[in-house]
Length: 310
View: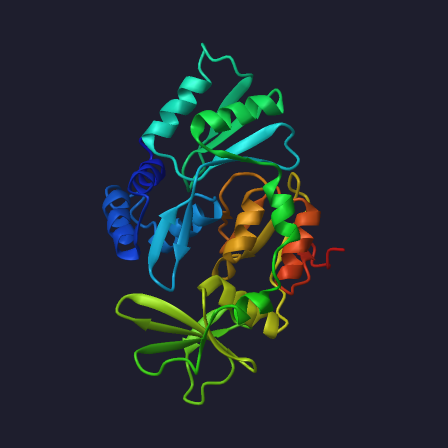
């Protein structure tokens, strides 16, 4: 386990929790040791790890914590689960012991090494008692088709905004930028401070504020971007049905919000993939789940040919 992403997940798992400054310092040290990984941004790495289910990030307080280990069944993959959550050395050793030549459980473990992100560990099992037995040995939970039930309970984006911390108005001073849903860019904020999504950069930390008729709320970046897109009726969510089991594609600046991203990723267990078109693809997402994700974002999906997806 000598890939930087695997080493980093192991370090996070052993430490269990920490500050955003801790995360950035460790990330810079580990990913800056080679030319190949030196350009990895900690903001992209934390997005990968949170969407994969390994990490929770509290942006408002600048703290992270690893999630409890869990074996999650995948849709459209038969009796196959993916291991998510904390991955300390002791858990990895228990997994090797439980699936080795002397093991009695009917299990097959395979690994996939993505271009970006830690190793994806899949477990194929013969019967449900086998996977439940492994979960018990690992001290982990077993979740049946989490992507399906998560997509069914996604809150509308407007409700998520209203549940965010309320403010009087975006803060003045420092570097204040306004997000343009039409151009998908950040621009200098005007003096009038109209409705929209604002970024306040101060002391090396970005904070985001959504100003609308219902007031001003401090929001997570990705949630704020999609709320601004919904308010502008801007459609940017595409469905590539020609790919195996379909794929959701969004612009890089409009990564899916935390819960929607995790729902999409738990369809395959694989991290989102960046393309040379400055987009991000979430792989193997069945159309029914894609439609629920879109509905929660107040979006209409457009297929790869430019037509709305029914």
